[in-house]
Image (tube, rainbow, N blue to C red; front, side, top):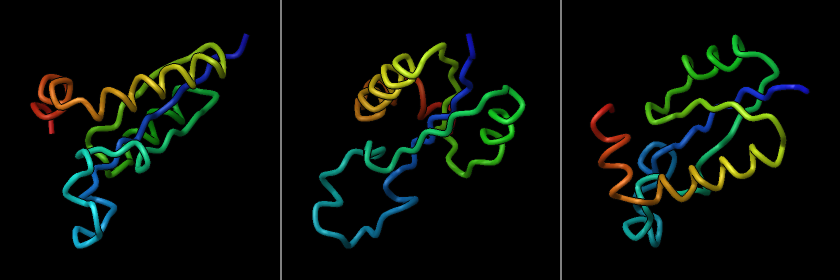
Length: 94
């Protein structure tokens, strides 16, 4: 069975959006619409992508199936819109 090596790139709104757009202030710091996921077939490519992303909050993960990738993406989307999770897992490191 193939293994998938993934990078969840959780771009912050201030990195990719215009702060003058309507509704900007109501958005979470890491809106799920800004996130991107890259999937690779080897860990070397995964680490290369992770090392070269400008998003410091990016996360690496592995999955055994496409369903597992989707599940993990959903989990990250929810986590990155949860201020308490961000305070514990992201903000101290960026």
